[in-house]
Length: 252
Image (cartoon, rainbow, N blue to C red; front, top):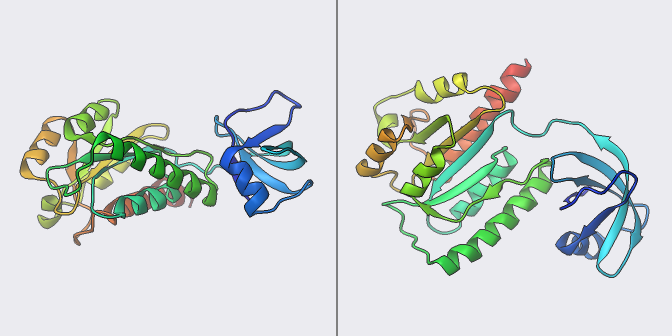
């Protein structure tokens, strides 16, 4: 059943209004009819099944049939900071990271980032990233669309980090030296409802200067196993491990 995120929760007993690109997808792509059923998700994360009862030229109305109470979100808020990589690698991180439960993506300009964008291009990219996150959230039956921020510099990332009590950065040098404890220890310390920020460098990783800046700002360096992962692989590995730790292992 198709899933749509709506911008406004109607008053009790009132129909849900589906507009914009979602209406186009519903009517033109899926070719739904009166009586068709969809999932609708509201800004507060509540979800329901709804039956389409009316079409107009630019919107559809649907009545709520049943509220859905399945838990779809990770027990903790996980933000992923990504040093701007080449090509479409960040799009992959956002798409797959959304499927794996991330709540926020923060691109940043790193010393070793080859990509350099002006404000206009960054804003256009941000719109595309937001669309990718929305579509991935629909496909994976999330109850929340992750936010995607505009690119910041390292100082901006450090400022964002002040809002997090748990913050890590994946550092290649730690992996080379066999560091194995920091990531596992952080997961053991984070409690449900808390926020965790993990940042990853671009191709080539973090510079020594960046690593020192992050350490002095309260970020803990960590390895992610004995192998060196690509910039687009490392966030997905971390999110998978977090899901296993909080959702599968604790469900045993």
